[in-house]
Image (cartoon, rainbow, N blue to C red; front, side, top):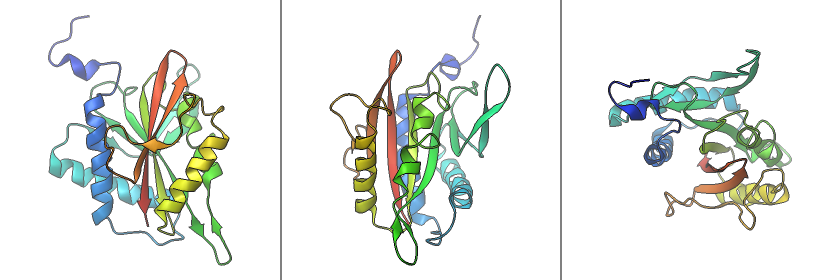
Amino acid sequence: MTIIGDASLWADLFPDYLVSDILGLVVKTWQRFKKPNSRDLEVPITRRFREELRRGKDFLELPFTIWPESSETDPTTGKEIGRIDIRFLHGWREDVYFAFECKRLRIPYESRIRNNTSEYVSTDGMMCFITGKYSKGLVSGGMIGYVMDSDVRAAIKSVKQAIDRTCTILCLVRGTSLSSCSIIPNKKTIKETIHELPNRKFSIYHIFLSV
């Protein structure tokens, strides 16, 4: 097949150099975003935030598009297997993207704080990337944790503990844990985990946002 124009738009992987732009966009956009209430649900928070991300992306003229909540389907059966919260596309291939799964953390109730870390690492959280439900064949994705009581340090600690408890299921690279982000190492609210998947390593970038 002959490709006319920029061949990178047909690449098999999402460009590494754009991942840092995405992480920076998320953090900067959250700073000016009208914060939700501490008991707001994940879906409406994410929908509002995604629209703000789109405005920020356009203002900075970043070379990717941001899709609304989008369906991921089984290529054989056509059955929906999940819905990606925030999806970034750079080129012409819909199967090459950078995805975020979003979860609430430290949800305050009258008598207690619910850490919600089991949902964060579960089949509908980090495991979406490990099983290939999302980002199949790709090498990176992201988790956004909305810290509903604003205690980001406690949220990071509890997520790290949950990851360490389930390190085998999560296919974590031996001897590693939730660590500083390799591409933005000076940002304490961005972390990274590295996973050993069949034929490749997979990085999950974790962004903790204070509500």
